Length: 294
Image (cartoon, rainbow, N blue to C red):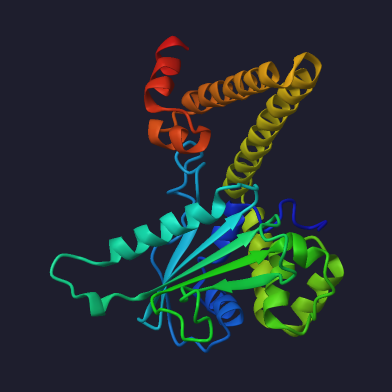
């Protein structure tokens, strides 16, 4: 949109927006299709706490609803073949972290994972919003195991659909996607919380610090995507010319060089070794070697 330089999909803006409990409550009621009395955000957003070199990894939102469930919300813009496995790993960590010494298993709260994706992950399912639970494979008619619920919202499918803009979830998705101006206008007319959210984003992006951090985040993401894509394409092209086996080896070498280049940039930004490891997939000893030789 003309008056929003960066979309709400930018995770700095996304996290700022849903740090407002009333807005988060309205969104959660839309996606969970239930009335929510109280929302408590566990990791409050603050520009003063965010540093480019510390927060370039995953930014997500953790909240507690009605004192009965823990919710983790993530905006993911870049396609990852292993994404579903990562979601399960995060869910396990959230469940484990909830149980303190002396607590009883029955005190465990339900965990709800909400993943908003700017790509398609389930090509054989048309639905924009899918909900996954644990069920016995031979008795799918039976009730799912309690304790874990995983939501996926695929914005790519949403953009290519004909959504009912009188549906509250679609209104929120129009705001998050920030691609269709007409859908946004209807959403703001129908839901005062959407209009309030849009105004908060505009105010946020009028702040110099907010724009700077958002721009850094966006630039890093584009640079990373470009480096990986370029290395992969070049390796594949050379592979066709000189043979598949050798081409794969060259492709891997190009990809590894791209990762090394990115690691150097992030080291210059004084990012932690652990964060660089998560982002590039390089081993710690390899990152330390780059650090010592740079």
